[in-house]
Picture (cartoon, rainbow over the protein chains, first blue to last red):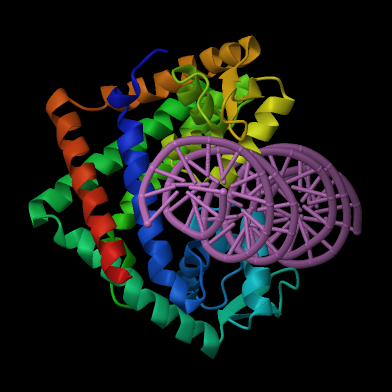
Length: 148
Length: 148
DNA sequence: TGACAGGTATCAAGGTATTGATGATGATCG
DNA sequence: CGATCATCATCAATACCTTGATACCTGTCA
């Protein structure tokens, strides 16, 4: 094969992300939420009345994925959806009180994970890491475009 | 909420990983493979006769997830599974010729993505990024343990 | 010999994601 | 006014991941 696995930067990146997702999962689980559900509620908290499609864009998933997720959350009474007054085709989505409570519970622990991650680094290192990650993201986007 | 989203290092990390996965997906798709399938074939290429459970560990997924994946790959004739001579309970897994061909096709393009990622950075930056990612991984593991 | 731990496989249920296709609605422009 | 375009919602098919539970086989230890 072209390149040994140990030379693949992508492996390290993916390992770190897997650990992040695992940590967030254990953080958010006592609130009865999964990570994507938590993410959706988080965005929803500061964007009341947003459409499902817009929420999907904010969470970086497809509208279909978000639709399934919102269906679950609606059935559990964590969000409410009601037709927009003018644009009848749009379902405005909002947090319920129960949704807000679940989000707060989850976010306390999720923020602790982020804090622990942040505390691992000195401020300069933190900035360095962000810059390197941003460059990696750009390079990967370009590579994918070049690929087809 | 506890911490603004823009301060969350985890967001940058996850964005980079999403871009990586998207790039790999477009790289590997012409070979008729998904990213996890490609990963499994990659490990299999250098570990002929490995068990499904061991393959799962190498790919950082649960044995169940790997079982589903291997079922698909077996049906498509990319891998073969046969009972171990002594440990009848173990299914030894091997690449078929078709599997090897698909892997080579996929790996050419996947390696190009890794190359593009690598080329974005000077050698010192590359090492720096790896070190930072390794520390992040450790910090996250500790945070998850502390959480429960 | 017999109980037990450890590795392996597999069924089941719940949740997330993709692409593709369809239908309904509002806005813009000829 | 009517065609076209963009946006939104949703059904369907496929694939992947998780936890929990069950069951088999094997080697070990009492």
